[in-house]
Figure 1 (spheres, rainbow, N blue to C red):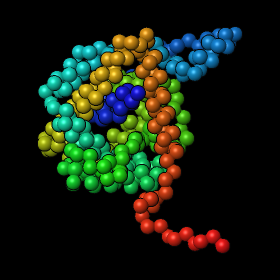
Figure 2 (figure 1 turned 60 degrees about the vertical axis):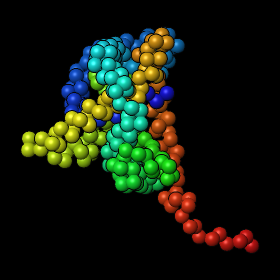
Figure 3 (figure 1 turned 45 degrees about the vertical axis):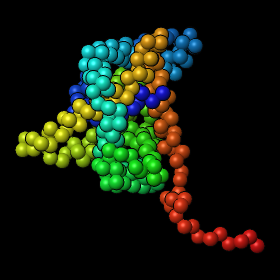
Figure 4 (figure 1 turned 90 degrees about the vertical axis):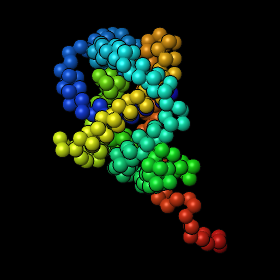
Length: 275
């Protein structure tokens, strides 16, 4: 299930809160107590869970859940009710298209030239034929979307993920992905273009993008999140497990993508007949 990572990936506007979040987390003292060594099963479970800040993480989960119940979920329900499904899908495509420069940068840093080529073609096709990205024409033309962010880039460089974290606003993550999230914001050209008090129009665009990202992301996971909260005995543990499973699958798919730089449809040199 892709609901949790997808929600975090699209929530780009929250990056300005990242330094505050990092400072809070670094100052935390609430840690889970490691089981005694004479209980090997408990120790193995503790190490596999890799959630030493679980007490504090659960507090942040409760805070996030409260904010979601009061603010985000009602806004997402209203968005679903007011905006027709085709329009919502088109706006989602626009948001994805706007994030293409960050995706392209990470494709290159991960050493994936075919992925970088796909991202470039997707941006060119969808920005023109797709009307600024409203229609995902590129997928129909053989350039499917894929995941790429700086957390994945760090993983491709061999940086370990570290312990599980549940951060305010950002939700489930780990130190590697939290750092990667901040770097993605830093390399996003829309973070820097037109900044300052003399660009009120650009400020409006930035905040509109932030708000629409949040509402779009939440609306797309309304049903699966509700189902988890209704059926899971421990929703926090379920979200932790889903996040890790999906994140590991994303990273493994990136590492396993060994496609040649030249597309398969490009004319290939003739193979000489066997002697």
